[in-house]
Length: 159
Ligand SMILES: C[S@@+](CC[C@H](N)C(=O)[O-])C[C@H]1O[C@@H](n2cnc3c(N)ncnc32)[C@H](O)[C@@H]1O
Image (cartoon, rainbow, N blue to C red; front, side, top):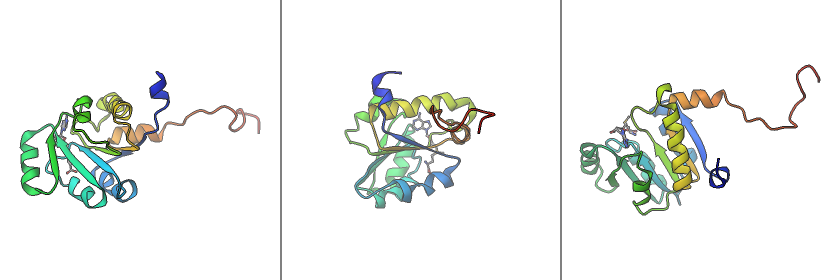
């Protein structure tokens, strides 16, 4: 791990499904936030984020989805973006404070490493406060993780 990765301040929030993904909005989006949504499809979640923040940019790899999102919500900025191209996200030219990720194919256990790598890349490059991701596998995995800190509790067999 390099120095920059060790100093990451970004919090990762893993949600199981789209209901949970959207339920985080009142808890994680504030009025002064600039929000990036990756995998916005037709903008259904983007439009829920919009009234709660300063600016939201909805993005998707599919030009057809973006065309439809723009048609449905002309007041919101939508851009074509491949979520795996983190530098292209940087070139959107905004200082994003929150990132929402809901990319198809990223929720299962087979793509767990991709999801973690993506979170790490966005945290390192964009340095947002929080990234909310829809990944049932990551939520399940994270709920079984516990960081080890020396000095906490007593060794097994001693109380
Ligand atoms: C489940 S839909 C998103 C639904 C949307 N977030 C909502 O709440 O209504 C997943 C979207 O991920 C997009 N997607 C898949 N691969 C992607 C990638 N590499 N970069 C960006 N978007 C991607 C798909 O085009 C699709 O629109």
